[in-house]
Each structure stands twice: as structure tokens, then as C-alpha cells.
Length: 308
Image 1: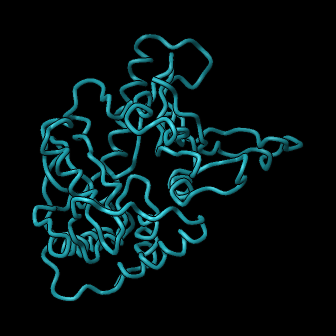
Image 2: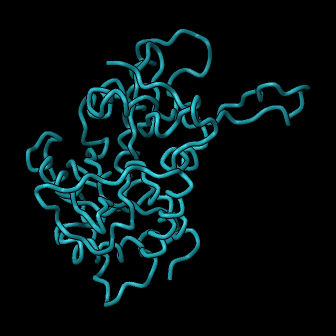
Image 3: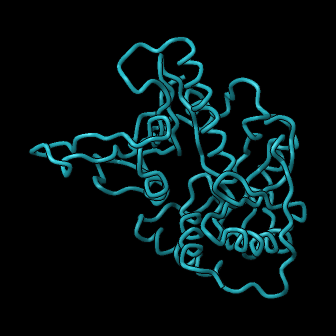
């Protein structure tokens, strides 16, 4: 029986930001050569209702005895994250999910892995991100359909653990996002972290190198947890962001105050913009006086995706 935290975690995963929806653990079928295009998006309110319904289906008891909690170690390889689970009972939820992915999903090679803050259902081990097998497997998993939907369309190819990486990863560099995902889709991203000096003094070359390494490692850890994370290197500081959003996610001119479920989920998971892992105390805009009530921790914020 799932507790409240697990139900919330699975529902959040269904809202999708670089995570395949747990609703994917239903009846699967492989796509025909010519698939119909997915239906046009509905309003955010309708989307939320639909995601709630799908999450309820996932949380229904699974018939049959689940297999043991089989885990493996892919820390030295690239791998595909199909579904990520968080919360206190993530191990139990992931174990039950693995049964469905292997049987109904037709992926007997899928496996569990505990990463930083999540337990993921993953697939494959690849030496390089451009390995033809990795690209073919990723396309196959993303193309799986259930009830005319593609619930794993947001499956991610994730990098090895930071200790196995040497040098920068262009796949996670925010400057490459528009080229990889399209200019129209890549308008905004949510900034959640800054690395660099916390004072106004000029950064040394060692400071800059340390900040860049920390930002890249943070982005890798988030990506391995199923987050669509990126790093961006400025002159003296480095930033970490999550998600790629377009006009359908945030349109202050035509739909002020309305944001997509994916963006809302990103804000809920990452409410703050951290400096070297710590909250940034700032004055609330427009607040009067000088008491503690006029200060807050700086929230995460949408920023523009830069050109290459």
C-alpha cells in the first residue's frame, strides 16, 4: 500500500519534466511504422485532471508477486532513465514499477538503481552518448505507446556518475539547448543554483574552475536522478538550471499567471535559487520596513535560454 508521500511523488512524476510518467506502467504496445500524431494539448487544468487519473491507475495494486528488488550499478556508463521515484517508500514503488516495465512494457533488461535522491528504473549501459545502440534504444523507449499516448516520451539518456567523467559534457551545456531541442521550444529554463564567489571580489582562475566543476557535477547528479538539468558557465560564475520551456509553458502576454504542469512541477521541486548550496537572503520587492518579515530566501526563477 502506498503512503501519501509516494502517491505525491508518483503524481509529480506524471507531470513530466524529464521524467517518464509512471502512468506508463500500464498496457504497452510498440508503435507502427506510421503513428498518428499525438492530440493537441489541452488546458493546464484539464491536463492536471488527466494526470491525476493516470496516477490513480498506477497506484492500483499490481496483481501477481513482484520480483525481488533487483538493482545494478551503471555508475560508469551512460544509461536511459525510464521512470524515477522519490519519497520515503521509493524503493517499494520502484520495485513494483519494475515488474510492469519488464512484463507489460516488454523490457526485461530494465533494472533498478538508487541514485542521489531517487530510485530509477533504467535501461542499458553505454560507453558514449552517441553510441548508436543508445540512440536506437532511446527512440524505441520514447516511441512506446499506451492508449494512443507515449508515456515514456520524456525518457532521458543520463551520464555516468561525476567521478567517472573527465572534462565538460556538451550534452548538458545550456548553450547547446536551442540547437538540440529547437529555438521555439527552448525559450526558458528554471535557474535553481549558482556556483562561485559569494562576495563582490573578483574571482581567481581557481575560483572559476572550482565553480564550473561544481555546476557540472550538480547538473550530472540531477540528470541521473531523472531531472532535465543543464549547466551554464558565465565569466566568473556558473549556473544550474532544470527544464526546457516554450511559449506553451509560459506566455505572460497571452496567458498571464498560467503555467504548464511541467513548469509548476519544476518550481515545486526546486523552490529556491541556491548559492553554493545555501539559500540566498534577499529583500522582498516592495516590502516596507527593516524587520525579518521583509526578507525571504531567493526563489528559483525563469531565465532565457542563451544562443550558442
